[in-house]
Image (cartoon, rainbow over all chains, first blue to last red; front, top):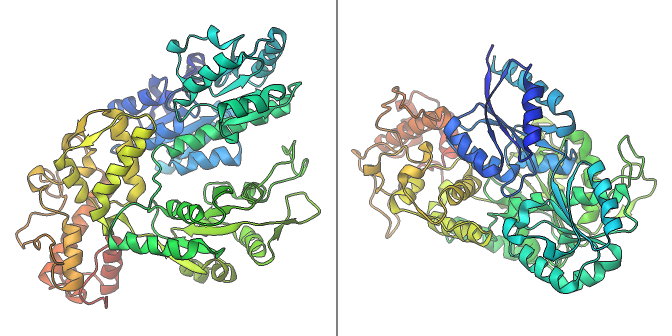
Length: 125
Length: 491
């Protein structure tokens, strides 16, 4: 089974600890790094070359939208899933427009991330 | 798990504590200060907070705080408690979209809704970082688009903008709005392809309280938000048929209903629609209504792909760098060899791709000169020693379409000219250590071979197709894809 080298991005450090814990049992996810804002995410996406980034939408400084645009401009960009506190059509619209492949509601983080990842692995064959 | 930080400035300690409780309840991280002086601004940036709630505050120090805040064009919005709202709005001269009124006593539903709107304001600002006022450029293709904008702007005519993804269809729509009599009213954009189909109707037309599960309050739709102004329906080709019929009705009768409403609302909006799809093909396939197509296609404008107007590239780069600088990014400069490499690229993602690249460079190399080596691999696939040759794509297009080189243009590509953008290290099969973008690489090889075949065939597509052992129609399709025109395509 394919594992996805994954970068987690969130300005809220306790959330990152929780996210690692929540995703621990998902064998498809191998967390290879953590970034705490959009800038750091752009640099780490370039240096780590992950397969997948799960990134918070709202972060001080550079948020998830701008970071997604910049990461998608690199060579062989990773798949990006944006985790948002708000789940409504307008938020989904912004996320889809920058080229992120996934949108998860932060309230259902674990369930929705794992569902997305399993579907991604299945499609990759 | 707590979300974005919210700053609360209020001299009324009891009320501030109440706000803390409510904010924590809706999962925010509140930071409470009783006056602006209590906040060490040297330790913060305006964007540290998702929103700033303002209560009772000493006007002078609040003024200084707001001045500091607005130095960042992407500052968070203010949520001002009702008794102080008008005074703060007037003193700060902030736009109403950046200064929202919060009723007292504070209610959970309104606070939650305003924070949601504050989040959207932040996202909107983030998308405007590198937005061009445009359309930028002096190429014949873009001059033609500008002329059409001038022709149609003053009238309420429905406009259909077509063109590949990333060619700046929204820029054209905004330009029409800005030059129209509706410019003092809102321009509201909606991407029909980016909103889940089942949510599109309530997003466009709004809904009444209780219209469906989760509709805890009534909400305006985009048509209502755009009242008096312009509604830009982007990616209309992705709209489901069930919604197409409703849009047709709005265009015919100028009325619509909110989801769950019993009465119709009148609508005074100008509609501009856009799509990257071929709607005529979609009609044949049955995925787009013919009657809607004719209603929309009153004044068609086609935005040209970037590869067909590469002469605009330096001006576009300059404007993008300037726009980013105005948004607080450092000034980035591109070396001549980097610009040459970009001119030789075929830009499948068009101006949007260029904009994202320049934004990336400005963020990663603020205040620096960016050389060829700083560009992602796909842009520098052309070996540096060949970079001085001007865009072979443009040259070939000129040569093939006119049979001669335009006056003052660069010399024609010679038969022995090295291949375009095919990395020397690859030679077709060897993978370089940094890897390749497979799709782009295959396209590079294909483009190069097509170019050679056309040269050998004297620009005659049928002969070039034989050399490539492909059907003429297939080659014509590919020529269109790469923005190449041929001698025998009747142009």
